[in-house]
Image 1: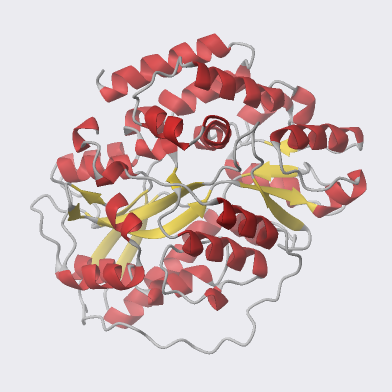
Image 2: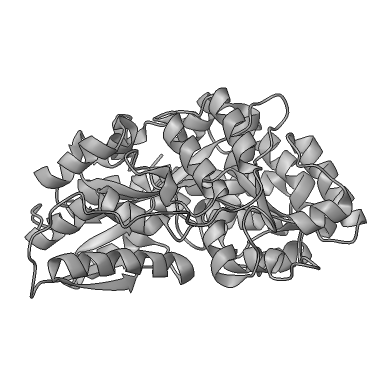
Length: 456
């Protein structure tokens, strides 16, 4: 993916301090006002009659995330007559699609979570360029930054259907009230809060160490705040090695949490056996005796809370921004999933183009947003579609930021380094969680993996 060059595909920016402050105020709001007095929304786009045509769509989502996406596909079916089958992709989307293409049966549309993988697909000639109808929706509904993230060499190939604020810590109001602690604003306060919560009898933090991608998010937030945006960009591009002192500093800081078994649900070993959904449910499943006081991850934590627990977002489950580290600003790391049309001849079918156009519209975004646990980068979507004030606050902050954000570092890197189970960042940070004292070993492994993946 280095062959993509340093152009628009690698462009990332940062949320301004004013937006961060607004986010902090909004996310701590209590209460949920439900769906309110929403009227049925009229369709904003026309779609062709696709009766008799079928599409296969691949996405990695499971549980509530998948169910909400299937609802979007159901609407597309009802409006076009097409038949859509949603199939699971693996965490390694690059390997999944490559294998399917080699076997002669690729999916028609794939949800790609990494800009680096999207550019890899485009470079290999696996994608169809966006058609005029999809481009018209992009021009109307998306800022330029989202266009560029889904482009390669200036040509548009994807539609970012889903965004994520990956700088959020969700907490149990019961645990915080019992411990008598406020929400922390700095890393030092965060660690102090964790110890106070532990002293009150509740395990402070649930960590999803079985899923390496959650550990990359922990690292990225600490690194961005502590070392700043320019260093973040340089590390993402492998312009500095993973043995750099800035990485040492970030791992040392993260070790203040990961190196204390008493602060982690199940300790390091228990964390390494905990997947993402479990990290959320074990925090909120018991409203009177929380399994943990806090769990870190993006706004999509909300869908797991709503789908798998009785906790009410804004009441039982609340959220605060990831704390600032040292003298740095509070970090804001964003991510997202882009839809791409797979085609080895560069041409999209009528059905592929129609689905891509639908996904770029507010019609699809509204259906996706209503259940919660989802944020759309579609700036034309009305905020009242979100089910509560917490979700609306997250969405409003994202749209207010415009192109002022930094994208998930692991998603920008080659898939072999930033998005593959058992290697790269995922494995390196799992190694670190297992033995936080061996910072040198973790850095040496990460640098060796990065050098191989980037072709250095």
